[in-house]
Image (cartoon, rainbow, N blue to C red):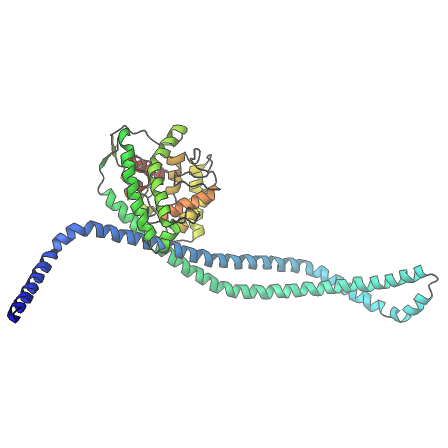
Amino acid sequence: MPKAWKHMRALAASVMALVLAAALVPCAGAAGSASGSSSTSSTSGTASANAYEAVVTTGEAYNTAQAKVDELNTEIEALEARVAEIDKKLPTEREECAASVVALYKYEPEIEILPAVILSCDTLDEFFAALDYYNWVVQSNMDRINSYAGILQEQTDAREQISQDKIELIDAQQAADDALKDANEARQRMQELGKSAQQGETSNITNVTEPGEGDVSTDAAQASSTATEAAADDSSSSSAAGEVYYDLNGDGSTDDEKAAAEAEAAANASSSSSSSSSSSSTTTTQTTTPGSAVTLTPIDLNSTTSASAANISWTGTKQEFVDTWAPRIDTYLKGTPQDGCGKYYAAAAWDYGVDPRWAPAISLIESSKGSVCFRPYNAWGYGQLDFTSWEEGIYNECKALGAQLYGGYLTQAAAQTYCPPYWASWYNKAVAEINSI
């Protein structure tokens, strides 16, 4: 091939490459319109997963630090109580010790004549009796003296330990304060995501047409597919949030299996809700006319008693959080199988950065507050899971609600995942119940 022809082909190839490159690069506007939604969703999901991971890790750090503080305070309290007890009995012990010292001192001269006393015994029995008496006198008085010395030593040791514990307590309390600051900031970041989601949804309230009876299976299958994809996204993440969430089964199953379980739970949630309604008169579950339109109830973002994420305070200690919410939840659950479980709901909600009212509200919708459970101690229609106690079930439910799939706060998106295909009715009931707690 002529050399000139080779150069011409090379030049033509270069020009063609430039043309193709220009054709394949989209304009800025087209790129934004084509991929903006996917990019926003991905960014939001990553932010949610990161926020939840921070909530879990900082919560664990605070719980560990606070446990050390509580341990030291308990030990100090016990030692101070023991010192007070010793101080109270010490005067009597001192008097008895002094009497024993005097008794031994008086008895000491008799030791010199002891051989003569023993030799004066007429029988062997008298000899052993005299010897036993002598030993008893000495031993009983020595026991009193040693007892007093032991009490004094215990008092000294206790006071020294109290001083050491108080020094250690200063560092432990500082560590707990630092951990609490980090924990509250993590929960506030997750709360901001919840507030943002609620604000975006509230500004776009529409009527939702729920499917007719013949369309439920199709819509449920579609919702299940969506839940499966969302679960797969969570399980593929290396964050601790995903690992905590998909450890709900506790059976060593794979991430794919757990994701499938979540999808199945989403598909079955609506049927368990309907079952709850027919089994108890106390549930607020409503019957939806096939194909009827449901007007979504907006969350009043300005009300201090609404389902707004802004109404949860993440500023105090965990105990203060529990003390605030446990009585309110107990009032809501009074007279039900979950009576007295407020402390579990509140503590679990703090651990996972969740609105403490959400899980109790779901228990009303799904099982009349635990009266009609489709699995043992599973009042939330969640997964194909059996629990051994309300406490175990509550912690698992709150762990799930806090994870990326639900985000810790009631939103329309969370309702669509939790209870397809009648998510709009479910969402409205959840809003009403949360408002009442």
